[in-house]
Image (tube, rainbow, N blue to C red):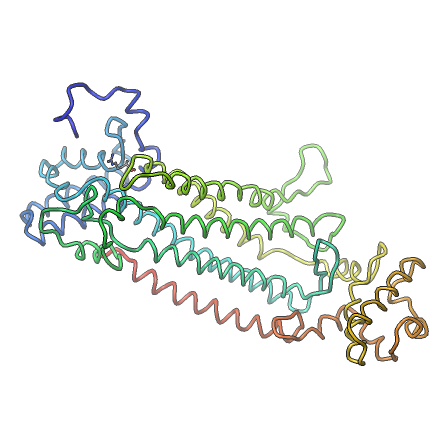
Length: 474
Ligand code: ARG
């Protein structure tokens, strides 16, 4: 394409080193849509003859169908998706030589990757809504199921399992907002920025922006070809989401071990051992955890590439797509495996309750409830904390659980208590009584679940509007 300036052909090793087809060929359809919008604009503004433009558009559609049927194989001699398509177009329709009027590959690659990323992000948004709905469905089933809550991975206080799941609803819905932020950030049209400084021709940038479902044309041509921070916005979403998915996986992995044992993972989402017949391994969740590092790495990769780049376009930017596509694929697969897995997770309630009530010397998860009982009877919290702490030590020394203590023993250790205390000593009562706003009390959870369902429904209808706003109008 640049033969005019050169006396020698490009060396084969250089072609191999500089090509980006292995990366960008997957954006062929989006590249063609960008070109169709561009050529329509050239016709609309009178820069090219309208009939010529129609022929070029027909040619582009032919190239598209050749690509979709697998008939057209790109060549690395032509470096990237953009030049392969333009070259094939010109073979089919010589007027194709006019397509690159008022355009550079710098604004072309920018528009193509934004269109591609937008498609993928809309897809992820839909999948993420499905994940949110799966979390809610499991929460609905587990409203009255009590499990242990942990801090420092030590048993802390009993909680409703639904409350735990609703915690993920919160985190994943914030991820959804981050995803939406990335979508909005990318939705400006680079076409017309040219190589870096715009065009001498009378182009209409709003026309192409509108056709391609962008909110507007980008307003600075240098910024347009140089910057990739909208990609960084995606990477940030992807990183935080991956970290969330990894933590959830870690919880499920731990709770499904023989040592905890109260969470049952679906057989269909676990694998066995080639040697040990008894094994049921949580490989899916381990891989979710294991893929997280890559996603974080890709964010750093982009930011490090950008940090020393002189304005405006530098070829380093070609590499921006490697980590982008890899992270898109990872996040897509993670969301789509977690959703069906979550729907089938079960709690073994007997084991869960047993681990709170006693067994293996445990069973002090209600200690805070007792301290708060004392507070209600006027004991300063620090004193109450001390008294209950002493009582726990006494129980451990004498191999007793709270359940084993007589009223006299309670009274011997606590400065103020009556028979009504005994009614508090159950995981059910403990959860039921935690009705402060946002707490694990059954009534609170019911309320939170109702709110969460409304929010999920609102996200769904908002998503449809987003999809419509960003639709390509070709
Ligand atoms: N394949 C290139 C990329 O992905 C297209 C832009 C090339 N521009 C250039 N000035 N060499 O960034």
